[in-house]
Length: 75
Image (cartoon, rainbow, N blue to C red):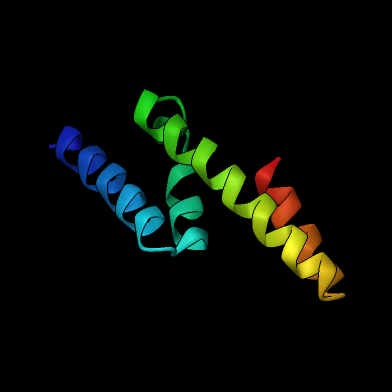
């Protein structure tokens, strides 16, 4: 039963990432069991790149607090 929940959450994180819902993907992927899994780590690595990209854009648009939040997530 728990394996099914884990797989569902992992797939949900991957789907959210692929659909551009980065905050949702992040919320799912930072859970300890997903973070420690190979595919969960892949999601987090991809998210780090997306958050850095979004932080740069926010910085260029003088939205500094949003840029800092994304940098924190990327970290």
